[in-house]
Image 1 (tube, rainbow, N blue to C red):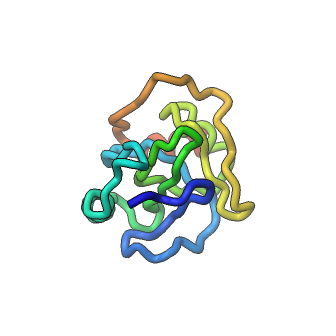
Image 2: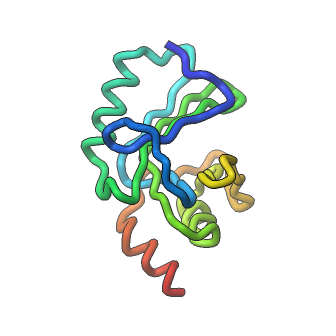
Length: 136
């Protein structure tokens, strides 16, 4: 199985297309799937999606999303959806995410603070972090 390069996807926990607004920011504490597109099997993809959906903390403000980068790496993860681009970029910087996704404009926005080769596998207190950023 191979995911299509170019366009990604965002779905709700029930795996229906997300139709809301806001900005998706990955790097939640739910473990993500990152692998070579050519080595991705259908069963591995399905099991990862089911596992991530089961671990979502807030199905109203989180989505499952995926894309394939230029090098052929597949990324599938749980993302928080926030209303503010500022908050989304602050979370992306704190989580060292490559980019955020703007649902209204249907486009990726690169994180200028992204540091290649550095990863944050576990992000604790996702909701309090968002609240603190909004209140700042």
